[in-house]
Amino acid sequence: MHGDTTLFDAEFQAPLALVMGSEFNGMNKAIEQKCHHIISIPGTSAVESLNVSVAAAVVMAQVYDRVS
Image (cartoon, rainbow, N blue to C red; front, side, top):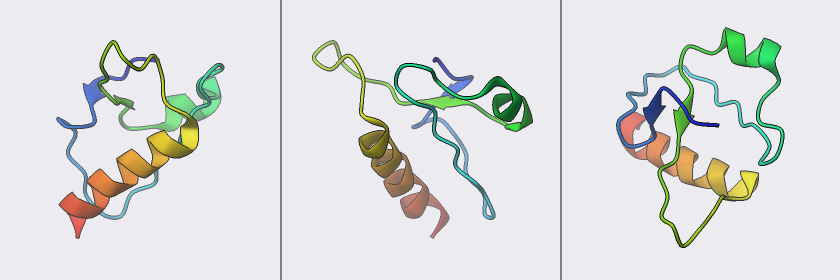
């Protein structure tokens, strides 16, 4: 799934909730419709996709650096 912005361009403000979709099925459409923004993690051609736990760690590190 491609988001409406990338992780590095996204603006985060507390409070916030992060919802992660699975690698194969993405996010439940009903939940996706309730999200304010859908972000994607830009990658390289060397890595096709990230495991959801790795993706969550990458996103949480960025959020922590910017919101703290």
